Length: 327
Image 1 (cartoon, rainbow, N blue to C red):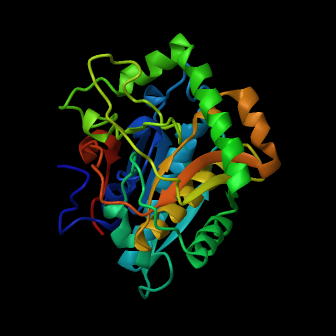
Image 2: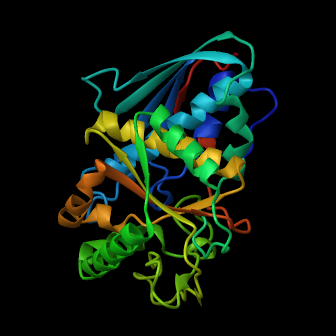
């Protein structure tokens, strides 16, 4: 069964896992697994899916990815009208256990989280140019408030800040390209195999800019057989840094939840998003961004046509154990 399809008769816990599986993740590694125990879901990181050689040696982006999956579970519980209790990093003896989600009694369907549910399936990363249409200030403020609700901050770059940031991204691209570990990280998850349920297939590589701005990641860098088309990019309507006050695994989980709240709200408001995270993968360059807190994600936001979705692993691959499937 594909994780993009939820059967009509499933437990609430299974519905939460199916929604979690659609979350964005670093290189679409989907670095999570779940254990269902009656009415409790345990969310684990999957270290076999870590990108450790160069891109994410500390597992920061892996944990952020799992935080995004956790937020999808929260939204789905609200949509189903189920109370939940979430415990982050609940057991020091199990460092790979990132969260437990206990599904409780039925409650009225209400609140801001529930209205985000339709966006879970519609949200896709847009690795192409945006239209010239600007993002209204009211929506930008909504997105910033969404981040704040999850103990994070969204800093929208001014024109001057954006020029400085894009220069840092271009520099980071050059530093990464010179590192053999970067090629190995990319090659593992962008090999062009159309039968995979993970990684980024060539259809989702997007495009690169004719002018080199913005410096989009070249997902074919490690695969000379694949050509990434180039296109003219108008100035991105909105570029922002998502940051947290701390830089710990707990903060990374908060960043992932903030990221997904922002992305789902952006989708509801008709926006698309993609990422320019290269500076965050080079420690000395990431340090240049510390005036904005501890930077966790760099985002492009704007209006665009629907893009190609990346594949998702079957639920049977990500559920470690199932006990009582009853609701």
